[in-house]
Image 1 (spheres, rainbow, N blue to C red):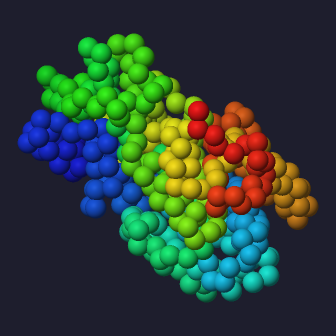
Image 2 (image 1 turned 60 degrees about the vertical axis):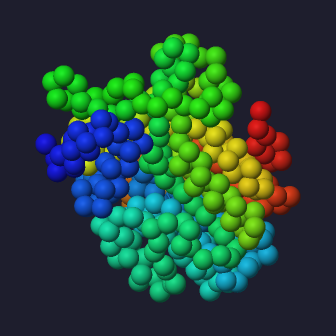
Length: 368
């Protein structure tokens, strides 16, 4: 039994259970025993691989996107470049290498990283501080100062907590994490009912026993990002795995050493995530006055930004082993059977601004 499981069991004994969102938050963000306080969670030696870990091209293309957005916004100086959940700093490192080719970009940029993990913060410092740029770390987006705001969140929203509700006797009640008769962690459909006006329209006629997954925390964060963009100018990019349209079902999952495990397996030692409902996130962002584009699948997005051209340029300078790594990484981030289809991209710019590449006006989010 992990130290965090003892804490969880004590809370269940005291309170009679906890919401799925509370359980997820404890498992990931407990200040001492949470998953993100563990070293080596990312990469081949960790539990999962993100797109920046798979290929340098990913971060370079995001860098080109940010640089183009900065130029389209009139090259504000200074401006804020904000990343939420920067991992080991690879995305930011690759982003800056590409964006730095834009004259004036590195002189104007002020980097702000939103990170709660002390272990990951040390890796980020080791990788990024030698660049000699102004970098500040924050635990909350509220602490980021005001100003022209360019934002990237890659595989960040999936880690924000979700709530589960189960339809019983015509109403949705919250699912709790509790203990079964054998003393094992389990789900129990015994929480407070969801207010009728909080039930999404698409879920109102679902049959008995249906489960819906909601994340007010996710929508609130995305709304704060969109408000910054709408008020101060800039652009925002969320990249994550999930679905373009909402539907019934649960997607909470756990992974350890690149293998799926039970969400109750070794709490605090496994990564917990849930698929992003991009329609809910897009609606929350649009409500703040930003123009929202997408979601677009990651594969077409990266290819439209020049993935193949960048790959060919890198291959020309690579030896045989490096060529194999580059090709495998490009497939990983863009092919449909890898990250290309499940992962999606959502962008936001100030209301009335031109669509950010490679989006067109026809891809602007329209709430249905």
